[in-house]
Image (cartoon, rainbow, N blue to C red; front, top):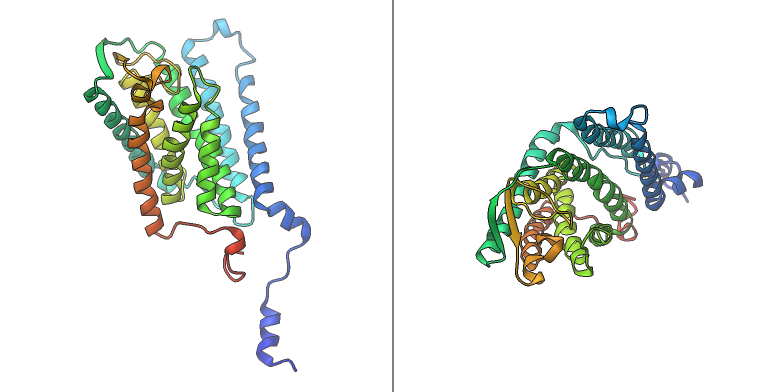
Amino acid sequence: MTTSSSIVEQRSAPPARPLWRKVWEFPLIAMAAALALVAVALAAVPYSLAWADPEALDPLVRETVPGLLAVALVFLVTKFAISRLGRFPRDDLPLGAAPAHLVAGLGLGFAIFALAVAIAALAGVYRITGWGTLQGWVGFFMAAGVVAGFVEEVIFRGIIFRWIEELAGSWAALGVSAALFGLAHIANDNATVFSSIAIAIEAGVLLGAAYMLTRSLWLAIGIHAGWNLTQGLIFDVSVSGNAVDGIVEAELTGPAWLSGGAFGLEASVIALVVATGAGLIMLRMAARRGQITPPMWSRSRGGQD
């Protein structure tokens, strides 16, 4: 016999989603669609100056326009398309949080790397030898600060982390996104297996933790940009294997495990400890705020599923 309360429950139950929608909203499908959208946006960037003779363009235009276009297109795609994908749509680029989180991130990125340089100097592996010329700083600022800071965070935290987390939980998302982030640097100049492992741990944990803590990309973007700009333009340290002309002339000497070798201080035990430590602190804060998502299969049917 059916009771009246059970009849009410049956009537109020939401209708089952059609199969096509379940497939489309499955985390890995949504992730693939988001990556494809970013790829299409970035594919348009090389054509931004195709109308002009490169030799006739002002150098400032050549160094800034493609990067600004890349950021603008990825921002628009993320804000108005990727934010609507998946079972649980959300905006990872809320404009209200942008100023405070960006400033905090830039400051944190500077502080973390400045501390790593200070320790390296005390250990005798980092030494300032004179003043630099800042030659090519505009191109570096755009590539390593603006473009890398924004686009890489959208891809690795805003897409890969987001949907791996929805499928397999926060810890799996942190591990997968960090490993892929390290792997993405394996082809850089002067890269080694250890440098990629170091990047995966120190930057993957730090930036993933920033995303988990705020549930916004802006803090991670600020940290990423601040880290790159600080080590390159201020301390004249190679950025992920790429030499930079900073405000000062400096050199790294000593054993590679301590100095990072030709790859830069990112591949050193010093940066590994400092940046990972900062990441672990933020992970603890995220856990205390209840920002840890369990795997899809362990959630209750009445909860997020």
